[in-house]
Image (cartoon, rainbow, N blue to C red; front, side, top):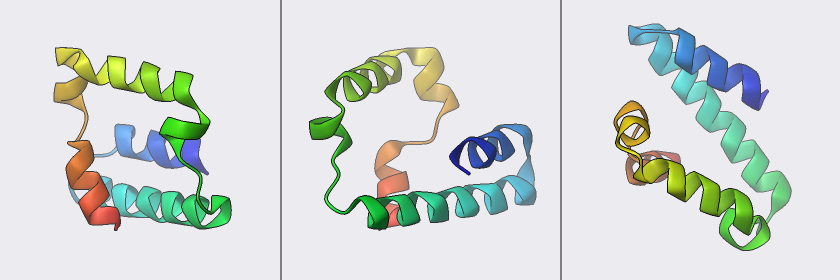
Length: 75
């Protein structure tokens, strides 16, 4: 589900893309509920470090949405 959701976001535009984002956020909420107190930073530190390093690259940070806005929208 996560892969398909991310793929829809990347392949869509406009209103269809917004629907895909909302659907993907729903997947993340379900995942978070199933995992309980899972913390990506604590439980998967190498993955978190890699993602953080990627976000420092200008090309990546411009292409992705602001993670703070995503968190605010999700919660």
